Image (tube, rainbow, N blue to C red; front, side, top):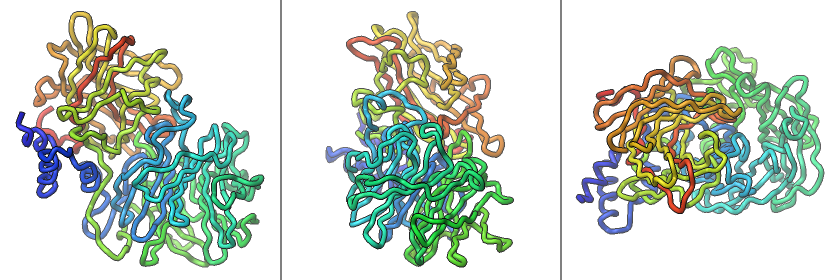
Length: 567
């Protein structure tokens, strides 16, 4: 095998010095360098930095919901909800608030492990908060069924501590700590009505000095039932003698950004709506983080709910008038802003290269790209990476699984843009003792669609599966597309954007990697449980045995729609 050609030709995005270092590392026997591909990655389907000193929203057109962010020195760090996905708590890094890189995850497994070893759609990590205190980074995150946890690290890109249960209880959500100037430590939070039997209120509880335990009862400091229903996601700050609680209200897709302020931590609090949709196209603009640059500029990061595309990340300018923040652009001067779609980039004192979170993966490395997540706590025996330049997924049997909605070993990532194309090549090597084995490409949500190779007694077929209302026990309906002479096929899905916040998918297959045949009919992707739709790879088995078959995926390439020459 020609090692140089195999690795360099497959690693299509490497150029110049990067390609040379990649090749040199392989010949030296030390394996590919794992960090450069993430750091230097530039999406082919969505780039927010316009390259002329301005940016466009969303700054990340992917499902990073409930964002919180901080600045430490010249570095910005952002975390978001991850729900059932593992690894969880994605941690992103930026130098300028526009160009972001996914650098780590705070959770390698979710606890209790015995619960999260099976898919728990919509449960797990809800809206987190990240803070920096005494030269350590803290993340507080809620599990709506167990309470508030805390993890910490001296380096956000390194290993984080095991979770500590700070505030046990059902329905206690959306925490944010405050180390006050008098040395006292507090935790502001909300309630989930589905678990706690109450919602639309904000409460504050005292913590110990280490921030590891709530030490007394919480007290409701704001009731939003009249003016601000479904208020949640609070973030607390202190400025000019005021305590400020930034909180979304009014519902995920229809709400507004509220700010509360008081000279007394426990209130009473004044309220002000500081941003809403107005005449913009950005619905429900709220829930996020206030950050200040090194040059003194104020900015606000928040999400927008775009249905199957998820809750995507926006960046808004922010300024202060009479000790109230105004977020976005306030054209009529009423103190309430509306979101911008394009704006001058933040002034951070320098200019930095364009970069985006990784999407494509050539599977040449021994570790997966950080964009990949499982549907439950992962088992080390589900995959092998970098073997002959492929990802090998073992055809795992999940007892009692009725559809792919019940499968833990789907390896998936977020939709990366409004319109894009994904192509992969796979080969199935089944173990006949395990019965029918399926390996393929899936668009996963409350409804899902898949295209897979299946081994049958007399050979192999390419099969499409579609399931509606998978979360409510929907049955997967399968259609044989064609018989296969060999268990090898190229699979493709195009995601189109036919209208605001709407998506449509068309699947294709190829037997030679050149000419692609469309599968009849479009599939309309749906969100997952509190998430956007995901696109992923899988290998499953009908029965268990003392060994498992496997599927080798040669690459996973995200490109612009219609970028390929033939279909």
